[in-house]
Amino acid sequence: MNNMTGIVDGMTNLSGNYPGNDLSLGSDLSQLVGGSITEYKGTPKWLIALQKLGYKPYIATSNYLYPLIDETPFGLSPDCFVLENSNHASFLEAYRMSNSLSFENPGLKMPSWVLIDCVLLQTPIVGFMRKISDIPLDLLKHYQEASNIDLSKMEYLPVTGQIASLGLDGKSLVGFSLFSLRSRLDGPKGLGLCTKALAFEVYRSLGYKQFYGIAQYDNWSVRIHGRFARYMEIHQPIVHVHPCKDMTFIYKMELDYDPYYLDRNKYLNSAEMQEPTFWMNAKDIDAKQRIEKSIQEGKKYIIAPPYLVKRDGELFLPIIEKQGEF
Image 1: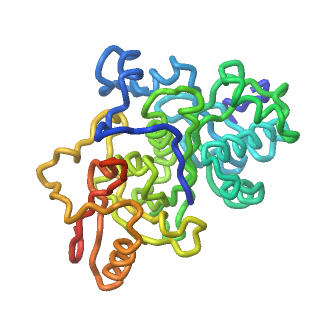
Image 2: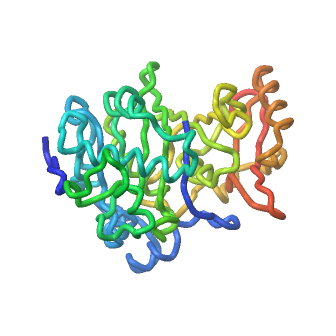
């Protein structure tokens, strides 16, 4: 395997606020690459910008899966951490810690057996990491106090991550647990978006185009998920077995995006986009129940750009209703 390091190397959460309707990557990344983050043959400029800020790509998986994925996304060679290498155990435990810190909810912490059985043995985790020396002390203390993490064997800590497993239908990816510690690091806007784009590039070699995911109506990550497709269709408006069932939904979409133009949304001002049928308050359980019933009767619902907005202190989603296919 190439670029293996010896560690001296259902849900979504992206810490940080996304005010207004702005869907750009943010000026901090744009300024580093000298203006608009547009096409660059080879490594995208947004990825170059992140590396200049100290964000280094990583892949975590199992030895037998590594040859099946694109281990050189955009021509880079991310550090790879595998379940079978005991020297990588602290990094993988640090991933669980980072993931749980982003959700700020002990009930949503990923159990070890899920990381092993349902993730590393089945699919890659893709994300960005930062040098330990760059981690703020108030964040670093969580790793220092963890008995299963030996920082002396590590140079980097994972600070973002995306997982996508392969569907049994042979054509779908199922994404979950996109996270970012952006706000804890004072990181650049768009870090979650870039993480998802990097992950899709790793999965691209598998040829999957349909994507299922899970998100919360009141989480700004909805604006990131929608950027990768023409339509973000609500597949299941209430997830009854989820601990946050009334705020959680399953979406599906056909991947359709240009990884070199992440600062643009080609569908945001598209003439083919309709006005929303209605705006749904993220807390409106009655509306979600009506959508659930209508889907069973054959209607379809999509969340339209800009996906989630804040008005008078409340969060709203623009919903388009349609009978039959979009």
